[in-house]
Length: 92
Image (tube, rainbow, N blue to C red; front, side, top):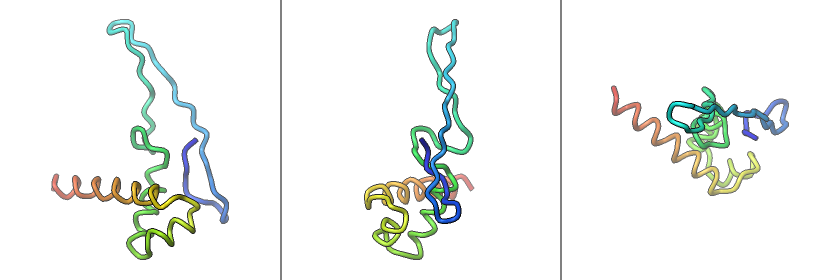
């Protein structure tokens, strides 16, 4: 289950099964990567961007209450997005 942006004030979770593939050459299993979710994340990229923008204009506690997530989850999303943006600036 992957958390996405709310719709009409309702919390939205996407049930997106990821396919697994097997390589006979190297004898390993691979899991499909979804373009809208970063690897090993439980939130869509657009939801994380939304939370990041909210934290910039409100406190972590306020966003935590509004989004029904813990303080640690909000802080983790913010830190992840901040590190991504920092990498993007470094590439320019």
